[in-house]
Length: 376
Ligand code: 13P
Ligand code: SF4
Image (cartoon, rainbow, N blue to C red):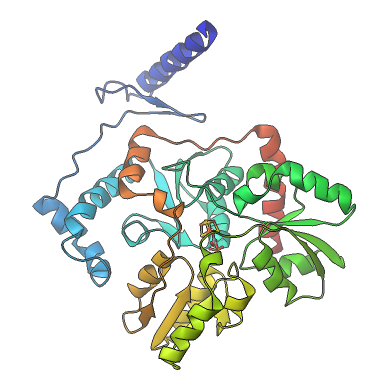
């Protein structure tokens, strides 16, 4: 314990020396913040108040959101958006947000938005000293694996994923013993520990291409059983599946979608491949979150049901006011753990830093890089 206290004291003293050298010491009453990669100047938590200046400066953002966020709610969001966008610049941070983030985050503070594949690709090109991942923990880990020398933060590290927690590295080692020589394809919705046992990763955007790129007649495909069944319907490669499910998409039913169609036969139904097979059987189009967004933007259906996490329909609706969205509202409780207040807290205090055991990180990075290099 004494040793640990000494180590922390030394790090803080080193931090202060580096700040003095950089001419930054003494700018704030608070102590500098230390992460694994750098020492950061202290920034005091700003006032988050609805003032005429905040109203004026956030007006262009509200213009984009006015059809989906009631005006009575805006004074609660705007002061946070204003403060986050200011401190983001001070920290030289980039905010990556998944398509399932709430509209005030997606349209208000994100620099880069997208599906898991787009976010992974863009994480390799991210500029800035800090990446703040507004998404779930496996997405933040992916960013860290691709940016080992940058500070990667997630505003709430408890933001998990039922798919990622459905399988462990030990499970994969057992599967490899049972099916020797059969390559392992793992959905990016998995922990670094699991990726470390994987040959190549995939996302819902590129799963078929990744499976077929291996040139084998069998593949172990983990952990999403329903995505696996969907991929199986599109390829001759035999997939060995695991019984992991997304707790949001498994709740949709084919019956519910038939009811939408009976109520209005003109409605278009588009679904994410994490849905069960009876749901996908009712869909006019199946694709990743980015592919669903592209489909709506290019087809402009009069009425659409987006069978996926509920916030995404709001995010797209803000951009295509001519399309009517029917929203079966299943929210991802993990994605919703990321909020404007905890993003602000994260930037001010440089928390929660994503750290990965270097021995695991070295092996977990490879399957993601193989996927990205495949350009699938
Ligand atoms: P996408 O890769 O399609 O964005 O999906 C990620 C996810 O978590 C879906 O539930
Ligand atoms: Fe995981 Fe499902 Fe949430 Fe996506 S929607 S992060 S797969 S639990």
